[in-house]
Amino acid sequence: TGGADADRDRVFTVSTWAEFRAALAVEGTAPRIVKVRGTIDAVSEGCEAFAEPGYDFDAYLEKYSPENWGRETDLSDEPDDSPEGLRRASAARQDRSIKANVPANTTIIGVGRNAGLKGASLQIKDVDNVIVRNLTFESPVDCFPQWDPTDGDKGNWNSEYDSAVVHGSTHVWLDHNTFTDGEHPDSAAPTYFGMLYQQHDGQLDIVKGADYVTASWNVFTEHDKTILIGNSDSESTAAVDRGHLRTTFHHNLFKNLVERAPRVRFGQVDVYNNHFVAGADHSYSFGIGKESQLVAEHNAFTLPDGVSPAKVLKKWSEAPVTAAHNRVNGRTVDLIAAHNAENPATPLRSGAGWTPTLRTEVLPARAVPFVVDRGAG
Image (cartoon, rainbow, N blue to C red):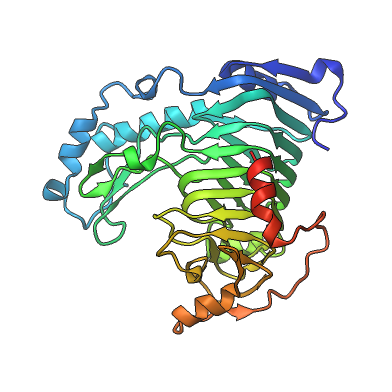
């Protein structure tokens, strides 16, 4: 129910980042409604506003280049006055500035067609009963990604900030939103040290024992690592996540994504009546992770030439899957059989071991593209 029962003095209309955070910070957990008018930019002054005095990106590149630093040692022990130390301090300033904590019993809703948050990270953390609707989220850009020379064989740039994080929260509904990289697609990012200068993390993360989460009628588009459910295979994480992370995705449009739509660990996740439109960079849609229990039914997939139905599912860990009544390019396809035929060394088992009971009306997969493409976002 979110803030449906809010008193008049707990209904706020905001049009700036300062007003938005102030409305969320008003004391108490009595119901509140925050109406967003227009596009609110959390980084309106640019990345330079967060930079620690003395931080110099060119100096950072020079010191930590593979030629000077090598690839054997990470940067965790670098002192505060080093280029990495100054990067850490700059990143901390951005972190404090672009995150907004959402209280319990809150509805955040866009007013009009152009309502949205740009460069912000919505933190739905350890609360209950939150609704987020009718907003465009332009992915936050990490102004200060970290170079890790030890990440993989070649090193890698690692970034922070998801558009929305559901962390340990319950009864969360995200409806009729659009998640996009907007003006900062990965295709426009430069390359340093031979690796993409990655400034994006995820669009939506559901982690740390979050439970009873629904994402409906959203558009997720133009992104790489899109949705993560459960953020680690570790036993400490498993102790928190087992029995939780119950999530539903229905009537969403997943368009021109690379991967994680979603990637699942532990949770019972129901994915039905969604339309997946893949681009040339498609890696996979559903990631089957540790102890996941994914049910994917009555979905439609539009794949370009050269992208096989076998790439819809990707096996990360041994876990059973239910995948039935799905259509690929207008034809019914057994996604598990397609995966196993092309990946005989890593077969998937059929039968997630549970049956969803909380669905609304379920459309036949053939009707999904027409309905979802016109109604989502």
